Image (cartoon, rainbow, N blue to C red):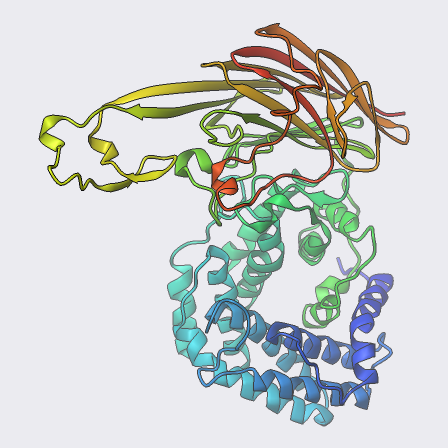
Length: 568
């Protein structure tokens, strides 16, 4: 069945492109000082799309062509003798240059598909692409998603300038297999890189190479992402292994992928996600070029599938569970990489947040648990188990050691022992050869997800050490029932409090089942979040902004925390 064009969507993407392109065309000879190579290529592509689109105010504009040539001259000036681009902290980077060449090659298709007035633009684009081709063909990468961005650039180069060697190199990269797990998450588990790199790159490769398996990978990722969409129109990132793990990420960048696959497959759930992604308007200036290069994007969406509530999902590979209802959306997370690798490191999932709760405008951004145990940092589950019926168990055992004298056979007269890392610090002590006296703290967190929130039970077993549970609420609300500590901080003992935003509120109630009484507002020395020595040694932190409510005490302890969403 042939679908009709979505004229309003076409007009929206043209307006988004014009917001970037019209000011550039108004000053066509102005040198784009300080703009990166990626920014320059992006501008050229957007100007070309606007020039070609009848819905753009720059359709057929000579000033747009002049602005393109000014930007192409600046882009060529940033190209080094290797064909790679200068700029950024990744020096002589094939993948960083691939981002730019992808836009250059798309722009080349737009320019060659128009009239002779763009011949000079097309020639300049071809020169830039040709200069980079060999370095991209032979170059390497340093993150998983870079492989697919680089392959997409090679495929686009082959599309415009056929060369079998480019296809051979793509085959070598793709032979490694796409890094997507059984649940549909890429290995970096990043919304940012899925939306901006892996999905668009694999879609392009599927189209150029005729590889349906790559299209299937994108569809699987988009299916998984459906259960990561939060009520505020963002995508869950707590499980990410990249920079977005500590930031919110909007659904909007997923718009072209949900839209394209909804149109091509008829999936109503993808259509619903595409409509949600466009709720706040279409702002991406790149979309106009995409609609010209992929006309299917301009067709009307199929009917959206209704939302089914309540809805539960447990993503086993990321150890991420959620329950969504009409009242609350709750997320439980136990998939940190830190317990296994014993380091805070770029490329690892490090966020210690283990629960979030959305109740309309009232949002509990994070629940975290700090402990004063050898400064090994906040609770990060080593294991997460589904107990059935919306119940999950998160567990962690931390161990630190005191070391005995070396055995006689390991002693040295010169006292020069091996410099070694024992997990907390390094020293010339030959730790591996010494008997150990271990001190252990075991934490178990049981969570039961409910339609209106969650019930949490904490069991901390081990030596007497201070702990602080931090509840971080999104700013904009009012705290009732907790003792103010100043500067957006409160103390909650055994009892209840509410956090209210408009008519939406989150009710918190704490009960002690075993252990000492909870800390009062006079014990502020440990009523705080401690990121652990991996951060503090370098003067850093991963603390969150917001309104902080603390519950604290001394282990061993058993307590319960009830979280309830209340909405009109």
